Length: 371
Image (tube, rainbow, N blue to C red):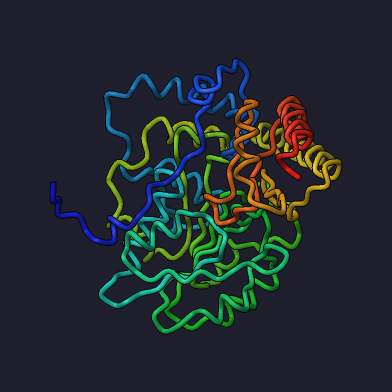
């Protein structure tokens, strides 16, 4: 059938999600599966958020608040911004796509500059907008080469998108170098800073205080999410803050009911549950230390991560190692899907999950798959 599909859409590749637990259990006949592929919170959601969601379920016959007024008001107060500077989305992925729709257009041969490897949805947003994607390789430490990224900006560049911490490397661009980078950019370029893992990185004194960039009137838009540290990945709620004119543009192109009622109710409760966030960050610190010991034991390396995952370098194509771990009931993320074919991205789990991963990795090494 000859369908009238747009040529650039035909060229796009669908998002490749991690393997679901149920599918792997059925394929391998396994009863116990450990999923360390999607950087989810291993402690689960805040109990307060769960209670709020259960309460909100009684009103599911009503449409959600299309403006997200309560959540946006809550966020604006926490951030010290005006309500019109805060946008919501069905996860930050939704906001990334809406930013591309609002800012770039193929009639001007527009460009988006990103790092490589970085979050795959930036490339998808560029493809959907039918604009040019300029990918700048990471430096030798798997960190953003901000000088090279600034050099890649032209008079056709509309967006520069950086994940900080970066996904899949876990590395950060530090405060001073980030400020210098912003100073080098010409007017008319919007910098999108994706802080999906903000809560994990924020304690680092060198981590950029992007809220100050916004209040200082810099041309930046900051993305954050409740899918990671706050444990609401299944509900999909992302938010962004920046210039009011840009939030207005996002409102013009977004779907009217993009954020469902359960997500809105759970978000406010999760944001206020500081004890659960503290437990999450402490569990991640312990898990990161245990993972570092495991990698040292096996002679494996990973860039210093400021998030809740590690990008582990096996020094050779890692797809066979991924498959061998799957056969033992351990799901990780293959690096070839992320632009890092010699690596596996492994989420930080709780103690029992890391112990299970360790047994599986040792077995894979003993079988000669990883050497």
